[in-house]
Image 1 (cartoon, rainbow, N blue to C red):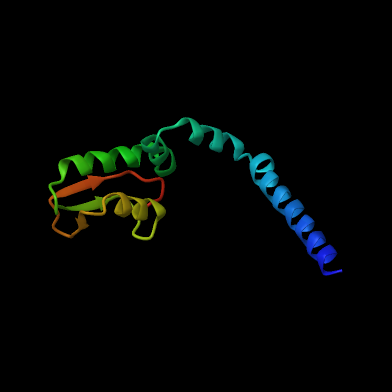
Image 2 (image 1 turned 180 degrees about the horizontal axis):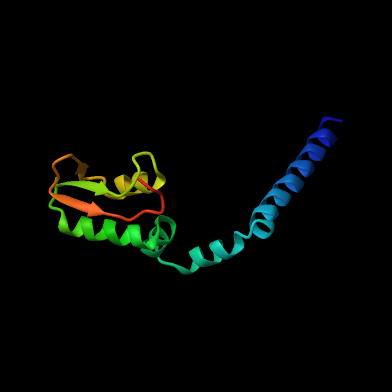
Length: 111
């Protein structure tokens, strides 16, 4: 009896898992995003997820900043996702009020 209940619960779980996965891929149109990500390199995936313009600014800043250098990101709201992504990718460098380098990014959100 316990075995039949466990098997039935497992079948229901598999059906729900397949339906939720199919809904995300086909009904919400995310299949094209996954196809795009599969064809890109690691750096291309970072650029695709971050946004090409912001990623170019971040990589250029990483090349120009000396180890331990500071930066200030202008044109982005403090609590926005773009700001968090920039801080993540610029990690060894610290954001300061009087920076070594000022980064200007024209985000879609108004500051």
